[in-house]
Length: 431
Image 1 (spheres, rainbow, N blue to C red):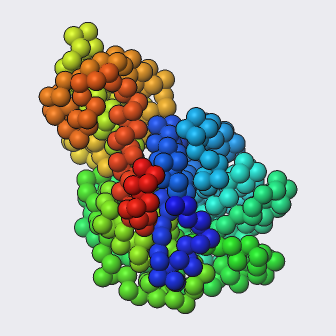
Image 2: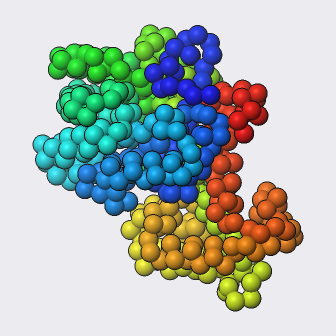
Image 3: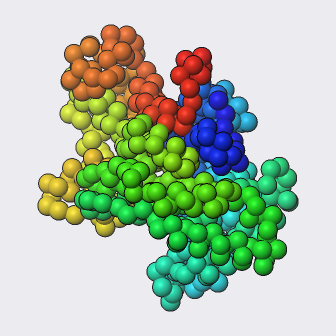
């Protein structure tokens, strides 16, 4: 069942809430799993890229928005997933990658980036200009944030008219957890105050209207708020809907909107279902998907070590350890503790900062060696029981390692799909 983003508020009001999973990853295996699952379930495949990950200068993936869109569509074609099911989104689009520069310089880059996203076919745009630039406070006030968001919306509108196709839908608001999760053990997270959420909407509505962008604001579908969920390096704070009664009242006063929930990773179907029911139908997930991908890769690495005399002892693990030690910038600020603690965090932290390394040549060579070593091998059942019991159905038959990886990512995606409200009959027909 395909759910369109602009239907989410209406479905909630009518008492039939449905959700959409937002897949926030650039890893080709994760993208393939999402697109295959979408084809099988005939459901919306919402794939989002962030301003740091993908931008007109390349981002940390080295991809422009056009490159990223081409990657998604190439994999979609290979998987037989209709482009009609696919929505591309841009997350936290604003001056964040250039916040070490003066505001006008950073905003000029942000405007160029937004144009590149929209011209590449991205139609779900999260406007996030909340961060201070050089010489400014770390977090900006609502007025300044809204003025800058309106500037970016104007660029998005002009770019969409230039390229044709559907006009963008927008998400506003910025009260989100730290990107990729917190760096310390957590005990509690307070939801956004209702008054703060209402103020954000009111100020944006006024400033967009003053800028002649009333129609664009009419396509604002979502507000980013903190529902009280988060994950750190060590643990997860699960959703507790007893804390969000006041926040829910915002949707009664502002029926145009639904809430967008960031950092829903590791919540599981029960909490995710409650989030959708309570007005958080856009569920963003990223690190969980690459965490379970790494889990499967490491299980196969251990299986190959036990099965094949000439493979060595966990060479993939060793290659990733050497790579992260040689290039520590992506984890050093986020992991703290003894050398032993740092070692396990590098590989197994829930924030999954190892995900930044899979695109490197060293990592790709190690993964390729693993997959080539196991391709066509018949893995005995006891080895799956030892290293990856849930994958036992792959035992005692010629193995395709890529299928194991896609299967593991899909297990997490299936939890989200179930939470988004698709009925059992629909799942059984298409899956």
